[in-house]
Length: 495
Image (cartoon, rainbow, N blue to C red; front, top):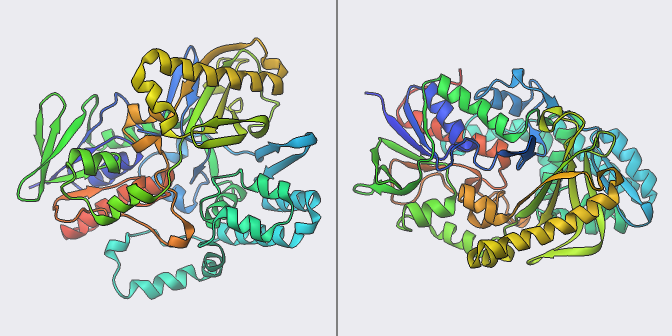
């Protein structure tokens, strides 16, 4: 008899699990509270403009790369258009001082040495390590839950080229590494803008490596269209998605997940339940805290989070000659809760003509912002919350019109998304769309996909393998189906 799997959430992890489960002979239904797929991997339209809320770069866009092969298992990557940046980010600081983060590592190395010759040795070490990582692949073909004792030495052999790099860079944060090895204050500041400096230095090196081999492009049409491509594969395989179907409880019988209770009172039953929803909502809400672990409690109590506010602008002008990614130093920092933004990140989407009407452009400004900065206003009244968003939007518009004179008076649409927005639409804990920031000294960190004392249940998504991002979330969906297939003593098929 075919087993029925119920999946909570049609984000990337849930869709990935759904595609792989269907392909391996399971009867699968997804229950999604929103009316569209993708979860946090989304975009929205305003008066002809598409505002993207997720992907800045997607690891796996180069045909034949490791993550490209994994993505291709769940969607048709060959039919998509991907845009690669020659300059990943331009950083404009004081006194017209400008640093470009070139995607090509040789060009980046020469540029950085020109800017800070005293740091030449450190620059070469960094770019050299990134080049080595660009040539290697991680052992991702099966999850750790299925490792046999003989797998470990084989895995170590496969990882030999990267072990030295991991030993040097994995347990030190970007902030600490740059502070210890670089002397140029502006170079340290610039490199620290590529990604949050609390992450491991390996995160920065891996990003540079993916850019170097053109494996970190932007999918044409944006994040929602990318999610829809995975949705199509799931539906084509016979899966079913129930939209506007919010789950309020995971029902259990004798410490076994038995089904779901929906907001409208509907009860559905299955043999297995996979939650691709937010971990906090799942453990403390849907399961009412009955099966949580000490590690989950401690992680939510002590590990740092980060989120951001995004101001998206639809412009009646062509910005195609301007930088695609820009970090612009501010005359006065913008403080949003406990986050003090000395730079504003500007993403110029003029390279993708599908996101704006002809001759027009989309520009999105991102600033780090705590959830607590917005929550009280949102709870107080819609009017107070709107005023707070308008205040930020006006500040951003002032900055944009100063930096891009062509945009002055040409702003047709303004949209503001805050951490409260992310939580409202997806349920993500405190708007933390990248889950926890794991201190590098903690080493490898993961949350088990099964909860203590609860059978027939699995958790997937970025919270179980931070910082997962989209590739890691996709991978957890694949891995959980591998585990299920193994328990059912059936081979795992990818095509």
